[in-house]
Amino acid sequence: MKKFKTVLTAIVMLVASSAFAAGSENVSPRVKAAFASDFAKAKQVNWEKTSDFYFASFVLNGVRVDAAYNEDGDLVGTSRSISADQMPLNVSLAIAEKYAGYQVSANALELNYEGQTRYYVTVENEKQFIKLKCLSNGDLDVEGKTKK
Image (tube, rainbow, N blue to C red):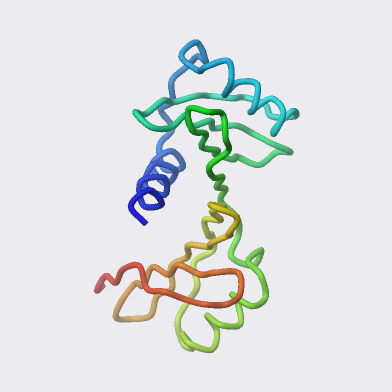
């Protein structure tokens, strides 16, 4: 769980930040080769290295994507911003049922990690904002609440 939170935090920071390392000179050849194999059509690739992971931010088919690789060149996770209406129907229905009367934010974060896809979206009403973690099967977890 700690590793997941580290990867999630780093990916979210990359999505939120526009400052990336300009070159790929600090990326190991093994990671570069794995990335080239996984995302052959990627454009505008920028790399950032942390102590445990290499993060690539790039454009694929017109969409900004972030990917995390470990030192061995294994793809650890990917994320991208999507519109809320692109979330799976199970997720949309679960949110509509459990949070009736709440407004769903226009965008969501789609995160693929360890073979599972999660969606992070915010719902709000007149009193509060609620950040949700949603699994593709419709399970919802509250990540945080903020009063207005």
